[in-house]
Image (cartoon, rainbow, N blue to C red; front, side, top):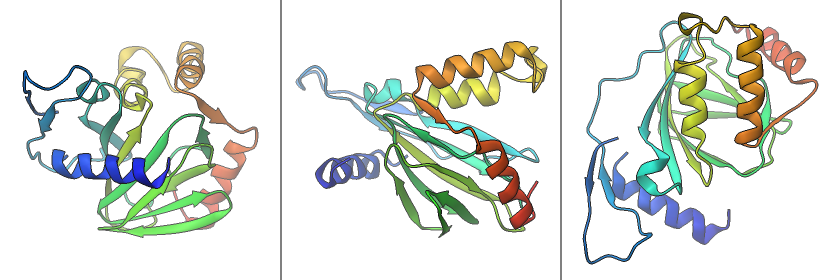
Length: 201
């Protein structure tokens, strides 16, 4: 993402205020998204692990971006290191402190901090602290909110998809292909090493 595009996306997000009320103008040309007012909600509960809540779905912006709130329990590891073929990702930390692996670098992002991860960068995140972590991730040019909504709220044991069941693993492979998710052969080992190094669950 070039600087001009990044600044444009950031300005649009600031105006939106972070799914809510759509304000349209019939005189505006087709193809231009409407403004969206997102009402405040109580902080998202991590439910003892990690949970997500879509705040701006990609459908509200004609696929240009989405915004997803994530809550992470204390000392909790995120996903295995991965990368995205098409997706640029912008994080804003609302509460707590996030730690990230980006390439080979460990990055700490405190509350109020931002972190931009352009496509094709290997990365993951975790909560290193003893208090909850909550952040907004904004996803550009890829409907990644659909992937997260299915992963966290549909492919669950309660819905007939136990953690390592063949049906769940098959669907995860399909979703990775659809959304350009890049997996690495050593990702599980690297995730385990990070958990051991930082005392995470």
